[in-house]
Length: 131
Image 1 (cartoon, rainbow, N blue to C red):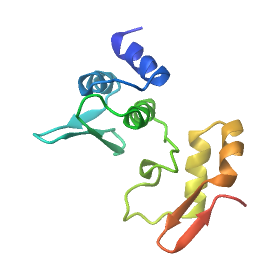
Image 2: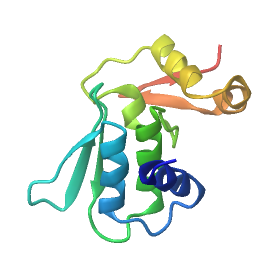
Image 3: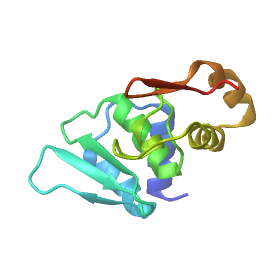
Image 4: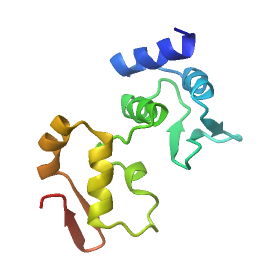
């Protein structure tokens, strides 16, 4: 087990008190690029186009660490249906694609627990995940 794998597992267990350099170490191991050109945020970019901006201030807040772990593992985090699960704001999202992505991101047991309560608000339309 290499250092980046150990760091990622430690981030999963305890998302408190991490530095941007440690996230970059894990990103390098998982083939995730990042850019930080004199800004206060480091933007991690996965090969499939998913991005995650993380404030580079120390310590990094746990919510960003959790989202980064999901990005590194290739999952979509459902923290009130994170925007990374749906694409950018200009993308038209239909109900079937949201449900498909939710099911792919979670095991059958978790999806059954989460499914009735999660929805997506698009403009004035609410897409319910219930059948």
